Amino acid sequence: MSLEGSSTVVTGASSGIGEATAREFASEGARVVLAARSEDRLNAVAADIENEHGKEPLVVPTDVRDEAAVDALIETAVEEFGSLDVLVNNAGLGRGGDVADLSTEDYRAMMETNVDGAFYATRAALPHLGASSGNLIFVGSFAGQYPRPGNPVYAATKWWVRGFAHSVEAQAGPDGIGVTVVNPTEVRTEFGGDDGDPFTERFEPGEVSDPEEIADAIGFAATQDHSTVHEIDVYRRDKFAGW
Image (cartoon, rainbow, N blue to C red):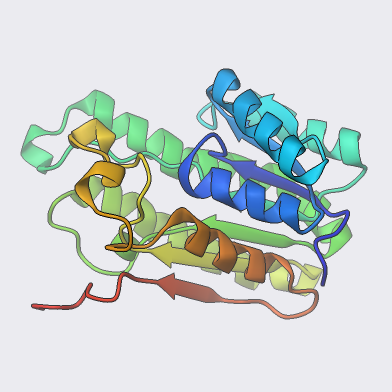
């Protein structure tokens, strides 16, 4: 299936994987809705996409922790474009480390963003994706497949996302909805900045995955018209060295 003319929503679209995905979709002719908390950064991304591809994305500032805001995001996309073909649940947050030292505030921030946000967006989008036989894509993580001693709570949120996604896949498949989980390892983005240096500073170019590589996998999943790409793992090549 071509993405040309499709209606797509990307959460966490102001930087990193979300921004790269929005650019990938726009390059394939999709009508893109950009959602994130920072309106200024969304506007900058939208302007770049319009300059590059001649199509102006729709900017909808959204905090995925806010149930009403997420409902409004999906409603706005459908009202603007008449349908919803693809939702990319990408918004995510990683904070803290050792459980004994993790504050309740950081715990709740991760749970509300990574878990609640994905639930709110999925719940709002499912009826529209059923109508369009669309694709629902979750950005998971290597941390959602293997233990992550450096940040157990973040890992737990990604285990939840993965389990939720595959269970939704089983439930929504008969309605014609494709569901995919894309699992990266480290990606050169601003992620990690809450705990120190972001990954853009911790890793040299080519040392780990680039956002565009993850966006390419998401784009592949989004173009399926009758099959489901169940899961895609995109790992740095030396991830298992020393295990």
